[in-house]
Image (cartoon, rainbow, N blue to C red; front, top):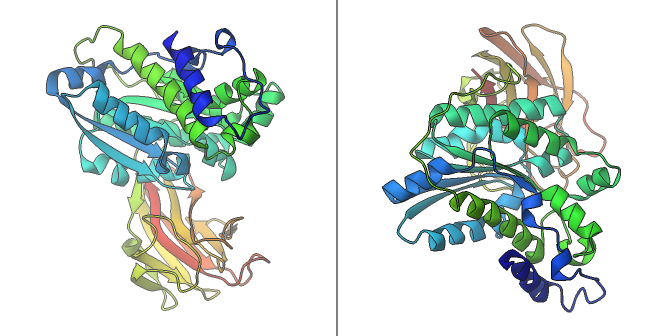
Amino acid sequence: MLKYLFTLVVYICFLLPATAQVVTQPAENILPYNNYYTVRGGVNNFLSVIKKEKSATVAFLGGSITFNPGWRDKVSNYLKVRFPKTKFRFIQAGIPSLGSLPHAFRFKQDVLDSGKVDLLFIEAAVNDRVNGTDSLTQVRDLEGIVRYAKRNNPLMDIILMSFADPDKNNDYAKSKTPTEVANHELIAQHYYLPSINLAKEVYDKIQNKEFSWDHDFKDLHPAPFGQELYFATIKNLLETCIDKPVNRLIVKPIPKPLNKANFEHGSYYSITNAYHDKNWVLDNNWAPKDNLGTRPGFVNIPVLAADKPGAEITLPFNGTAIGMGIVSGADAGIVSYSVDNSAYKDIDLYTAWSNMLHLPWYVLFNGNLNKGSHVLRLKIANHHNVNSKGNACRIVYFLRNE
């Protein structure tokens, strides 16, 4: 009953007066939060650490919906109030525009390198759709993160979350489960992890006339109303877990991988490992010279850059996957690449957002190599996107799965 009253309070705070025309359901007809999460293995180890050690670390890995103020802050404050005797450390690893592919290769640096993590929240479903990440790569990314996390700390609890966007609403309207949601649930089920399908919850509640997208939720970056809804469902899952008896720490064997080519050994590979011609410059404190914006963590950092057609790089590496993380601005070019003397292929580095900011953009050249030594060759093409102002390639990291 309390959760229904909570929802009504949210309506009063956020629906009026801007949404006076929205018809909301009586409390007894509101769809319950527990329709949209699956507890599976729960967060017993996290709660056991809280109970015994009075100290715990929680990490939030995601895109702009994790980076922006909202549900993440509310979850952090909830935990501090719910467990006042526990000292919490929170890792804010949300970076706007990034989805599962960047997460898989930045996970070590941005999360694991800072110490033991007890509870990890992961979200990538919105940016995986927006960025056009294919389904197979999504599975390899998410599975890689989970396996890397469990190898790093077998006691780590993990919650996978699928957030809402208009494309997912359209899929559900056609009785189709969005690919990104299906892949999040696939990984959660295989590794017996809690998962929350907020995309389905938002769609169902809109159909149930509890609120509207345009007046209340407003955007895939949720308005305060949407942030409150996300938090309320996450809190409900946590409370469901807290209501169960806390057992001793349980280490479970990691299941066999769904995809043997997953990126569980993914990490950044330094740009200093590349051999390059004189057309490339290593700028140790890169910042744009135009007026375009940047993303946190992708400015005032070392960047290997070139803008002349024919500029070439050779990168020897060991591993089963290779790619690169770049900043893509208004002058982003096209690169041609070859792995192990294969035929050269082109990749356009200019994105739909490059004219607005220097966007962090991740490119996977090959994710299914045999283990062992390989060589990547990359050169700037003599042509570029018709909307681009140049041929620039600015590499922040190489991506490698060892």
